[in-house]
Length: 114
Image 1 (cartoon, rainbow, N blue to C red):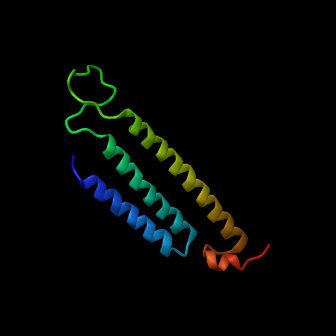
Image 2: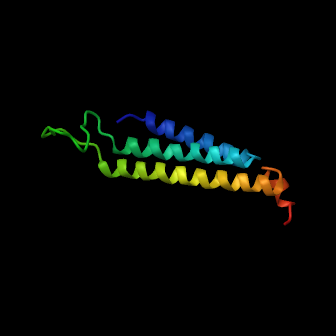
Image 3: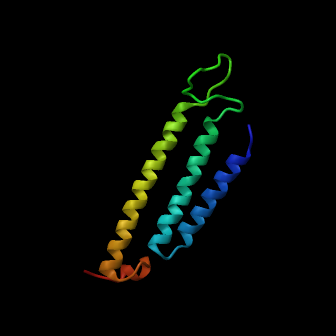
């Protein structure tokens, strides 16, 4: 098993977390959260992969050959759906805050009343 997918997942998580902490724009925060969630895709797929393995659903499975874990693949697909829904919600909230407050900066928006 290779360590590279875990390094990539760590780098993606760190980059996304850095963007979340240092962002002053709601859209940038939403994109940074999406990058952070991408780290979970890489981590889940690398956990379920088997070197020299076959897919979990095959037309002619070969006995004695290991299979990739289908549960982690299903969790990754669920994670992608949750990520898209969260991004859509965050972008809708950013659009609403811009139309009501005229800004996407959280600090400036805190001063807006109404």
